[in-house]
Length: 477
Image (cartoon, rainbow, N blue to C red; front, top):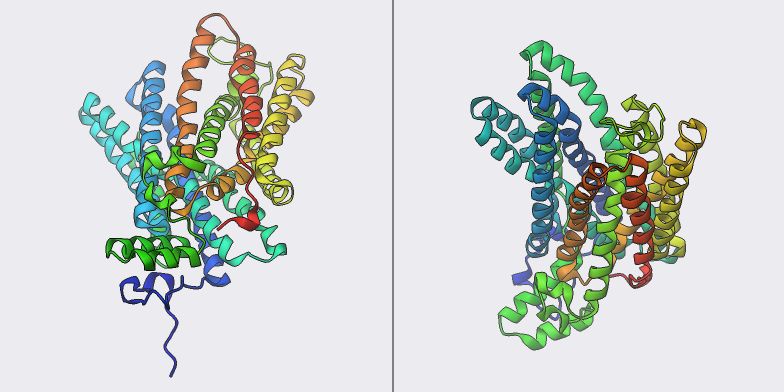
C-alpha cells in the first residue's frame, strides 16, 4: 500500500535527502481552509481590538476616570500595541507563519480575559490596576498584527496554488474577502455589546456589562487558535528552514543547490533580522510603505475614530453641523463603505497593480474628505455621501496594500518587514492624537483640524505609494 502523503507540518526536514527534497505540495483544499481560518481569526482579533475603545467610556464612568485620564490611558495602550505588533514580526520569521497565526489569536484571547481581570484589580488598587490594564491591553497588538501575518501567510500560499494567469488575477480579490473581516468584526462588536452589556449588568450588577463582554471575547478566539493547529506551513518558510539547516551542518554546496532550484537569493539570506529590512532591495519598499502607513493612519484616526466629532462637533468645538449622534448610523455607513471598498480595491489591484490601486485610492480619499469639509454646514445630503466616499477610498485600499506588503519582501524577512510597516500605522495614530489635540487647543475647530491632519495626510500617503516598487504578482514567490 502506498504511504499517505505528508502534510507540511509532518515533513521531517532533517531526514530528507537534499537531492530528493522538494517543498511539500500545498493543495487548493488546504489553502481554502487556511483562507477561512484567517478570515475568522481577523474577525475576532478585530472584535477584541475594537471592544476596548467601544467600552472605554463605560469603563471611565465605572471607575470615575476624567476625560484626560481616559485619553492618557488610550495613548499608552496604543504605544504598547505598536511595540507588540512590531515585535511579533521577527518571531513569525523565526517560528513560522502557522505558529504566528496561533500566537496572535491566542494573544487576542488572553488580552480579552486579562482585561476583565485588570478591571477587578483596578477596583482594589487604582494605580497598580491602571498600569496592569495598559500592559494587558498592549497584548491587543497581537490581534492588530493578525492582518500583517495573514497577508504574509496567504500571499505565500496563493503564490503556490493560484499560479495560472486567471487565478493570479484573483489573488488580491480573494484576500480582500479576508480583510473584510474588519468591518464584519466591527459590526459584530456592536451587536454583541448591545446584547451582552445589559445581560452582564442584570446578572452581575454594576460593572458586569463590560466584564461579561471581555470574558465572552475569549472563547471564539480560543476556538480559532485550536483550528489553527490544522493549518499547513508555507513551502517558502520550509525551504528557508531547510537551507538554514544545511548551512548550519556545513553543507554549503547542498544549500546553494537547493536555493538555486527554488529561486532563493542565498546571498540575501545572510542579512537577517530587523537590520535586513534596511539593506539591499528591501530598503526602498520598507521605508516608503512605512511612511505611507504612518501618514494614512492620521486620516484613519480623524475620519473613523473621531468621525462623529468631525461631523457633529464635540467638547464645545464645532464640526460640520451634521447630527450623527446615532452611533449605529455611523457604524453602518463606515463599515459598509469599508467592506465594499475592500472588495473593489482587491479586484482592481489584480488588474492595474496593487501599488497603483492604493495610490489612486488614497489620493481620491483625501480629495473626497476635503470636498466634504468644504461643503456648507449641516448639508446632510452632500456631507454624508462625500464622507462615505472618502471612507471607501481610505479604508478599501488596505486589502491591496497589505497583500502588496506581503509580496514586497523576501521570505526570510517577510513577516518582520510586514510587521514593521503595519506597526507604523499605530505610531501614526499616536502622532495624530497629539497633533489634533494641539490644533484644537490653539483655537481651531474640527473642520480645520480634519483638513490639516486628515484630508491632506491621506492624499500625501497616496503620493508616497508611487515611490513603492511595483510587484508583478506573477513573479511573487
